Length: 414
Image 1 (cartoon, rainbow, N blue to C red):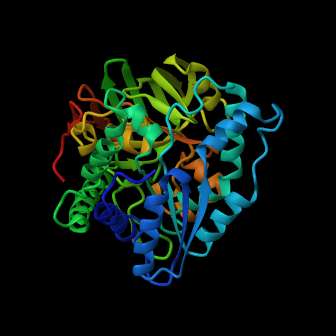
Image 2: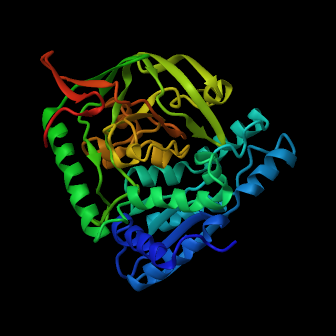
C-alpha cells in the first residue's frame, strides 16, 4: 500500500530519529527491529543513518499477523519456545557499542479474545529470553531508541470515527506534532526540550526526597524511592559517552522506586495495551512494595497473569512524572500505545528497574542492586496514573512535605 506520508516529512522524522534519538556516530552500526508495516520508515532511517556515517544498517523484521496466526494455530504446549537467535543478535549489537532502534506500532487489540494462557506464556517466555537485552538497555550499554509509526491497525484503534482512508494521515499529524517535527528546526527544538527536562532532573536530585505521595480520585499511594536514587529524563548518555534520547516523544522525568516501600492504592488513568490486549480502568493495591489485590473493568485476567509472571513483576521498577498538559496530552487522543500514552500522564512501571537510576548502578551486583531497593524482573510494563486531578508531594527525610505537582502540573520552577 503506498504511504500516505510525504517523503520530505518522512525524511525529517528519520533525521530526528538518527541525530536526536540515536545520536548516531560515524562508524557505528545500526540494528533496527520493526514490523513489515513500517518499511517506509525503516528505509528512510537507513538512508539518514548512512548519510550520518553508519557502516551498516541491519534489520530484524517482524510480522504481527504471524504472531496472531501462531496464537490461533500453534500447538498449545509450544508457546514457551523462543528463537534464541533473535535476542542474541540484539545483545551482540549492544555489546559491540552499536545503536539499536525499535519501531513500535502494534495493533492494540491484535490478540484480544485469544487464548489468554497461550498469550501470557508466549509473552513471559519472550521477556525471559530477552533478559540479557533488557539488562544491557537498562545499563545504557549503547545508544538505543524507541519510536512509532502509523499503521492501519493502530490508526483504526485510535481514530475509529474517521473514515479509514483518513486515519493514517491524522495519526501521522499527531506524531509529527508530539515529536516536534512541525517546528522550523526540530533538532534545535529537541535540544531545548531536553535541557528543560535535565534541569527538572537536577532539581529533583538536589531534593533527595525519600518518597512521593500521590493523591487523586481512586488513588492514595506512597512510593518510596531507592537509596541513592537518581532522576533521569530527556537525554541519556551511553557507556561510550554518547548522548541519545531513548524515547521519541518523551515528556517524562523518571527514577527508581524502592521495591519494598510502596503502600496504598493506585487507579489507572488510561488503558494499558499489553500483548495485544487492552486492560482498562484498573486498580492495584500495594503492601510493602508488592501488589496484593487488583481489579480491572476489562482485561483483569491478563493483568493478573502479568503481575504473577515472576517474583519481581508484582513490584515497581519505575516512577515517572509527566505534566498533564504535555504535547501528547494536548492532542486529546488515546493512543493505546505505551510510548505515547506514558508521555501524556505520570506513570509507574511494574517489573525491572533501570540501573542508571541509582548511584553507581552499572557496577552493582544483583544483590547490591536489590539492597538499595532496585527491582529485577523479566517484565517492565508502564501504566498511566496521572491526570489533571492528581497532586504529588515529595517527602523529605526530616518529615517535611513539599509540592512536586499540583492538578497534574509542575509545582516548581527548574
